[in-house]
Length: 301
Image (cartoon, rainbow, N blue to C red):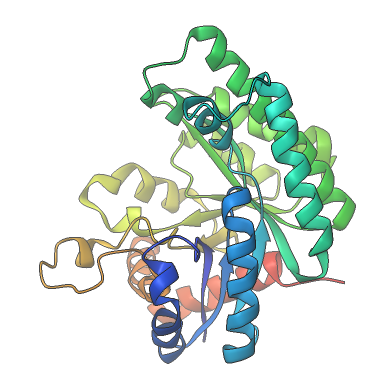
């Protein structure tokens, strides 16, 4: 059997500095593939270069996803990066940079990600007016539509981020309607780290989407996500670390752990927990994860 990490950010510290040993450890645990996600222009080239380097050393263990994280636009606004442009022009500029790098590297790209909508983190800044919040949401939708169009054009799966404020449903609904409209039923993808409502989970599954589970299911606070896992059929479950974020519970509470960040070997603990929740053996759960990752993310010509 083999394990996969379907969502990880290898060019972020401290993964970036430790990636060789982290991959070595993953391989020793029978790791097979990790899908490296990107979020914005500042991490594209780093990630592309790292994937090439790792390819030479370890064969094709690391696949590349290229995307624009929805929070990029509010960050640009908060950090005064708009250079006199309105947020829509700024969003278009971000997309143009992305598209140029995407098309130049297309033969090495396995998926479009991380991308999607986020109606949660913009509220953490306490500096945006209601008008700015609506504009940030709108620019996210416009760019996500463009990314969906590229997914259709190049027949690439998507790694989708869709996060909302507690108790809301607007973000997931908007995400699903864009995927449906732009993809006309052809877009394949994973809702990574889904923490939204149980009601909308059935719509995500009805669209043929997979759902990515990570270390949140190992946390005492992760009960609602464990409940979601119970609802997702085995053939739609993916595993991810979202490293360097979200270390597993055993690492979080281990004062002596030398590596405190999310990294590929943690997939094992996540699969163990998922197997326990689903009431099946670890081996069976790993086999299911292997099959699902390969079905969704293995490169197609």
